[in-house]
Amino acid sequence: GLDTSGSMNEEGRLQTATRGLDPFLKEVTPPVLLGLLVFSDEIRQLAPIKSGNQARLRGLIRDLPADGGSSGGVANAGGQARSATGT
Image 1: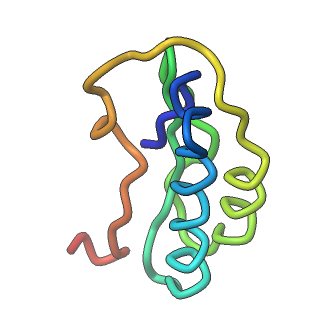
Image 2: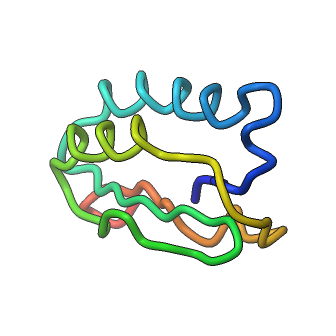
């Protein structure tokens, strides 16, 4: 999951986090499954977990605004990466 709460505007935190994801998304290849959840005052699924959606995820992440409150402690709720073999 990616925190998009208003506090992520401080010191460019969201920009730093999204910049860090870009190289990962460029390197990962199928059969790895990827999806994207974001959270602030609520959790939203922006992209379901599937294979081959790296370009879409990069576009979604690039356009994310930091707004809303904080849900505190839900960072591990999603945004999972796993291989198609389940490992």
